Image (cartoon, rainbow, N blue to C red; front, side, top):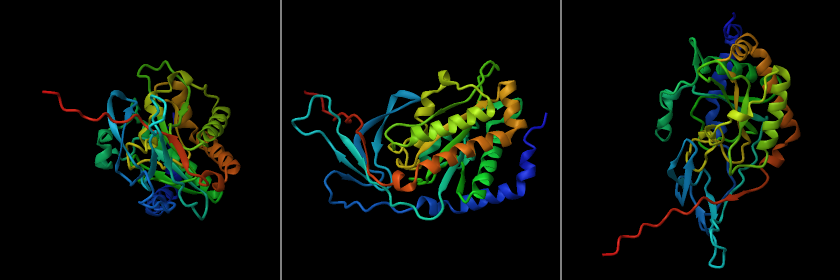
Length: 316
């Protein structure tokens, strides 16, 4: 069985893509945001607490203090006449529409977890799925590099990203690549998800990639094993992490198959060009039908998180 020999075949071009993409990240992350005046009522600057709590999909009993993402937000809390249980709204100002070629972020899941910032320290050392010496990073990195080559040839800028996403990352689309394992070799198929309290185009991005990927690979859609760690993936969670994808950036996660499945593993290692081509086709389809003028045209208004309880000292 050939295992990832495509890396060698693509080495010169792909390594250049990674180096160029990573060198450009400061520019990608620094795309300007619409001006928000600090005197606007309800304005909360980047990183400041929102006075609300969120829930960790991996540990619902361990809530965090929600914070404003890069660029800040406007919080509108319920007035005195609001109905009981009302939580208010958060307005996320639209970023300035990026200029230049369309941009796509392709994240390699679990890559360079030893370089994560302190806010992502729980990810430090995670290596992802592993089966008989083949790692999730091995598979995802080759496919990400191939996607970059394909999209570059179409004039699309690609950032091949490690685990750490630039703070408030802005792009026309973002996809995080992963490969799963059930530990015993029984499950097969692929699965995808996106987050909540984000822009309105993620269903379209997911559908375009899902249809292209399923048609090209023949893998079954594994809806039964979409986990809360996927829907609550850290890179989607702008209210918890500054190093997350901007709420306006359409973002999805793709588990490309199971390393523990003989069929899936053979497909991922013997035909990485098929997987990469399918993912690229789905991304191009999305970009063709979703112009920047739609993605970045409006502020996002999302439901606020529950209010953080106010501590009351015990009555003597």
